[in-house]
Amino acid sequence: MSEDEIINANEAQLLGALGLADGQPLQDYVAYAGKSLPEGKTDFASREEIIAALKTVSDPEIMINIWDLGLVYKIETKSNGDVYIEMTVTTPTCPVAGVLPQQAADAVAALDGVGVVEVKIVWEPAWSFENMSDEAKAMFELF
Image 1 (spheres, rainbow, N blue to C red):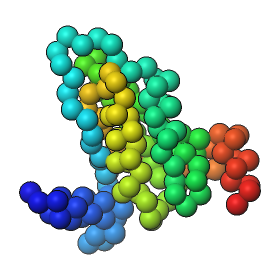
Image 2 (image 1 turned 60 degrees about the vertical axis):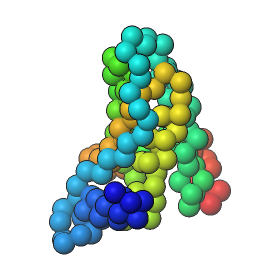
Image 3 (image 1 turned 90 degrees about the horizontal axis):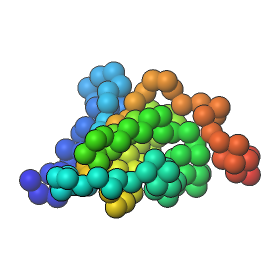
């Protein structure tokens, strides 16, 4: 598959996930990064390291990271070093909805001790301002 075909397939999946294609309801959107770790590896990235990596990914419109925005709902590290993350976006029509999950997957996959990263966009529960950290709320008020 060419790079353009991959981009078009990703865009089609995102539009479907956002319910913007063919009037479909909101669906899941998944981004992947990384590769399987060698068998026998037991030195995996910690939850704190994963959170630190997620904090490097910011919503470009408001410049607050996805962790402090409260967009990350679940982090699960598997016994082989793979990481599964559930996150959301502020609204289903968020213009960076297809970018943030891939950036999150790439950031976590770059850590030592992380295998394949799967970041899934979920729509329940819906995001709200209450999800934000106190620091993010303070920063948001500056805008």
